[in-house]
Length: 221
Image (tube, rainbow, N blue to C red; front, top):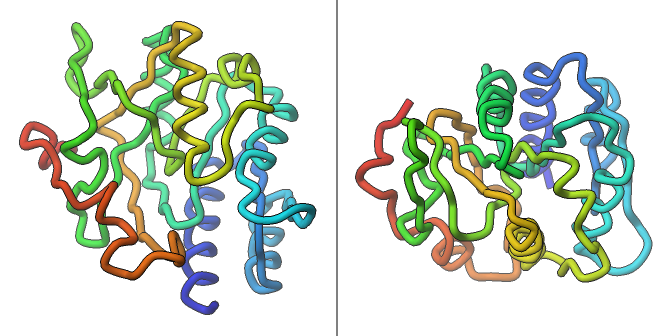
């Protein structure tokens, strides 16, 4: 899978630069020797999940939350390239909004055009905020800063596996009274590589990513 290896290595490299000095874990459901060597060389602690049948996203997230010793925990998917300044800007949003359990970055395609959140994601304004929006639906796991205490309170035995994992996590957090947000001024590049391979190419992203961006979100920094 040379294309997928390349994408994952690009992701790991961007995370290593932006989160230099932080504890970084690269969790794999499947992995090649090329990607594993790249992760180790860039300061990641690799974890390879082999028991049971894939996908094993619930187990990966459960272990990450269990072992987290910091206030915030980031989830970054394999096909997302983190932009410089992401950590600083998102942590500033988290410090300013104590009721936010998770802040998702806005993703852009290879040409820099926003592709998430799409027009079906109901976003509402937050008083006094220009770029932070409250999200009524589930957050993706693309590039999200989570408040670790909110994740620790989840009953993980009731969390669904992929592809409904993000939905059940978001629902559980919202039931506990937390807010979920989108930061439209913090972006990452979503390369859309290797996902939903069981669907035909024309359908892999049609449901989530092909409904367009709300006009007021276009062209945000």
